[in-house]
Amino acid sequence: MSRVLTWRALLTLAALAALPAVPGLPRYYLLLAFDALLFGAIAMSLDLLMGYTGLVSFGHAAFYGLGAYATAILMERGVLSLWACLGFSVLVVGAYALVVSYFATARRGIYFALLTLIFAEVVYTFFRYTQTFGGSDGIQGLPDAELWRGVPIDTPERKYYLVLAYLALAYATCRVVVTSHFGRVLVAIRENEDRARFLGYSVQRYKMAVCLISALLTGLAGAIYPIRSAFATPDLMVWTESGEFIISVMIGGLGTLVGPIIGGVFFTILRDKVSSYVDWYFIVIGVVLIVIVLFMPKGLLGFRRLLGFKQWRATA
Amino acid sequence: MARDGVVLEVAAVSKSFGALAALTDVSLAVREGEVFSVIGPNGAGKSTLFNVVSGLHAPSRGRVSFRGREIGGLAPEAINRLGVAKTFQITNVFPEISVGENVRVAAQSRSADSGRLASLWRRPDVEVRVDELLDAFGLAARRDALAENLSHGEQRYLEICLALATEPSLLLLDEPTAGMTPGETKGATQLIRHVARARGLTLLLIEHDMSVVMGISDRIAVLHFGEKIAEGTPEAIRNDPKVIEAYLGGGED
Ligand SMILES: Nc1ncnc2c1ncn2[C@@H]1O[C@H](COP(=O)(O)OP(=O)(O)OP(=O)(O)O)[C@@H](O)[C@H]1O
Ligand SMILES: [Mg+2]
Image (cartoon, rainbow over all chains, first blue to last red; front, side, top):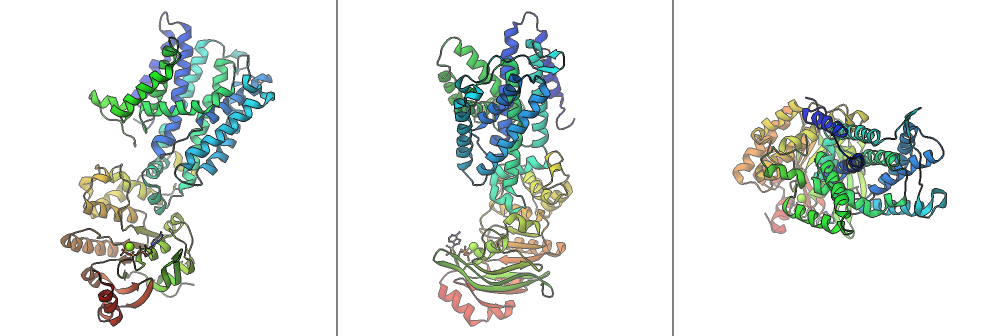
């Protein structure tokens, strides 16, 4: 089949679409599934940078948070159209990502991680202390967004299908990108960026482009979050959030796209389950992560090999 | 202005690293279709000359022109896109992807979509060109192996495949046979010459092995402590007293 529409992808989508039909499933689980899939999609977007290009962003929470604030700011002012919120988020996140990616890719090595982190902290601090946007409380108590006039995205089912549609779109985008001419160059940059230049590739342009794609996908995830939660707060873009995205990618398996989705889902569910018993869920996550890094360097997806499945290929 | 048949002109190029003068006032002209070799003792500045021509370093002084166009100081990617490719003295490939993927990513660099928006979704078909190169260098059976798992000799060939895949008209080979046994060196030299002829390439070559250099070159330039001390046919170089002095006095090889 094609690069995107594999039987496996379609079956997975169908199974996920059937989730609300599970008899007796508490509606709360649909919202947990929303969070899990959203987190997974963000981890997948980050994998374009980490797994394919070899760049570690410590500032993805800013793309996420900016997307969320863009939606919240519009909805607070009575603009409830989903499409307007998505469009505005793309503009805001895109403009910010252009600036960050330009500076972060201008130099090599550790600067990328450092600059993405510093820029994100500036954005966090701005929203944390700007009273127009609610300061530390953020923007709360938002109404329901509308798919179009008269069709509010109000029930857990509708919210769940919104995130599912987003995930499908983000996955298709990532798959197309990594299997394209462009995706091959990303892998070459990860492997040996000096040599890539001697083959005629303007490495910085490729890095900026992949940053922009990853940032926009993460920004779109941010844009739909307030539609489920009815709020946007500065906590969405605190730097530990970026760290959790990175951990999800590593748990799932670098350079696999599907792995980070599973990693993000796993992380979200673990956090939800553990933190309902103990506050120190991060210790549990930490132990899990150490076990994975030590014993499964390819992440959860790498585990499939031990079970006799065919190995996933980082480059298609 | 390009002089008749001159592909690459290096005019009074100097390059220093801090106080170290790696190249001093070096000039040479490489003509279309010839094999031009650069020899000289270790540290003579041969690789530095290649790095200046291929864009890794900007010349401190002097000019470099390729087909009449000034390229001194351009970025490596820009120079490559003009048709100059280089192999590295120390193997410099993409280690953790397959041999086939290595050559594919190099080959697609010249596809129509390269550098355009459409490259985000299109995947150019470069298989024919990849197969040709892998066949020519005996790597066809190794296409699915990771590059880092190749033998040293195979990696040296892959190094050349990457450069050739970008379809250069001028190929810079920095000691392509470095680390090969004398037997391998002989085979490799014949193969390189054969491929260069078949593709109508101009070759600029650095080579340590004197028998190789004398056999393959149309003309030879000799560097010593960053200066060009001689230039001429293999016959003339073999008998040049300054060259003999440099090699004997230099105390190596
Ligand atoms: N990037 C650099 N920074 C500082 N010094 C350098 C650099 N590159 C080369 N040099 C110095 O310039 C001089 C010439 O080096 P170069 O590599 O060009 O020699 P070479 O003729 O290629 O030698 P070899 O036969 O050993 O490869 C050496 O003294 C080297 O140490
Ligand atoms: Mg050298």
